[in-house]
Length: 115
Length: 110
Image (tube, one colour):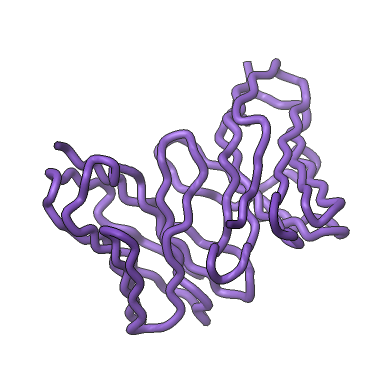
């Protein structure tokens, strides 16, 4: 099946530091990767769309300088939360279209806690 | 603007008690309607994609149906392991963005 591997699953960082989250497509090529965040008991909110080899497209209200997205290869996309603050604490999930049999495949998510 | 509304917000079922979840949508040019299951602390797990009104898909105790304005996820004789949040999402462009509903949290008790 189509698998997106996301790491780390949990990370705790100090306020002001940066954190990188990786998503790798293991058995298919992900030309597009979607990045979501999810607050407790809420649904997924799209943050940005990245395409391999080009700049990411950010949703309205998402700070592109704070959430840096790199999609340098067909199997790897990264999200870096820069100068993290406690309000950035959330569950971050990546997703890629993986064909009609698998729909959009999601990573397992990263729980970010900024202290 | 595309909208996806799921109801009910929460559903508590006895084991074996069948029920249905609703996903109503307004979107220009629906390309696909997706159902996902999400367990706490995990990413959504793909269940179904429906493309056109009248389409139905089944997987074990789950059956999804689609009309021009809404989709239903029927859970037949649920088991405790069916407890999860069920998310509905619509796609309005070719492998474009998904618009998610708020989800229905299902709890199945023995």
